[in-house]
Length: 339
Image (cartoon, rainbow, N blue to C red; front, side, top):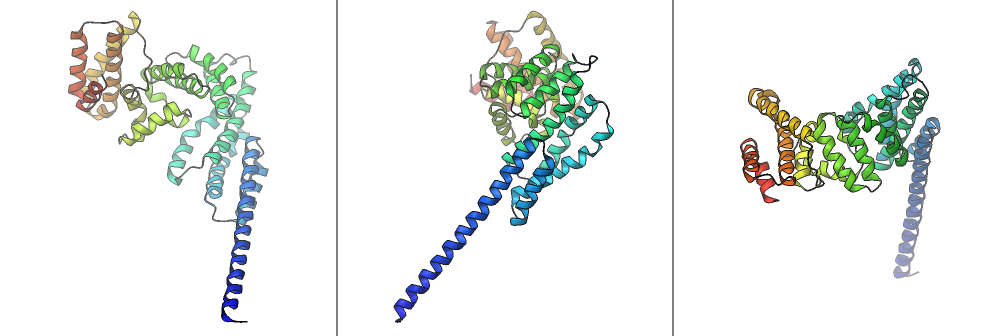
């Protein structure tokens, strides 16, 4: 055999070996992905033991798979938190305990870094289904079956598992009783956006952030309408704990909260009184100023919208614009640039 033929045979053998390795790698990858899919489906069905077995089997194949490690960390976090559920006899209290852990879980996610959407959704489905079982048991109790806060929690659970029609049913009931609850209005807005009722969603989002922004947890929102707005506000350098305060301001300036309405006489009176109180608070409470300023700006913008809708004289609008300019020149410039 001459040198040329030997080199050709050797090259052919190396290519064959590479193809075998690639094929084996693809087979291993497919196996891991299939096990992940099985695990996520088990989670959605509430079969936690089977889910853990599938994940651990996948991990034996590839111990360094980042999504597997992330998912197991999250599951272990929840399993640790829910150990005490058997000791909580009242179903309402069990459900409330589970839902109360979400804030801590989001803080945990911030620590461990990158989230994986399929894993996150499966875990959210599992946890929300667990809470829903308790809440629906509580719903059968004649004492609290008309509790609007119970409706709110059930609506949140149905939204998390993707049953938006049933979520709407319960969230409408909750918001009907809790008209001053930013949390209830925001959840209702979020589901409206998820089912394509964008105009109604924008109205409700704006109302929610006007009524009670501090009660709204942005982590709970799923629709692109609010998620993208939150990302844009975050990109401006707003700190996570201040997002809910600044979202209504920038939501108006960016044209997201574009569906507006004329205020009723009673509402206008309450708005002016709230502005008067906040102006005094901003002047006299320097420690809380970073939170009070966006709340005041939000109310100024509502007053400007009302004046526009009612064709009020320019002097009233100019007075509000001057106040905005004095309290935050950047917001004034942004507002004037879109007008």
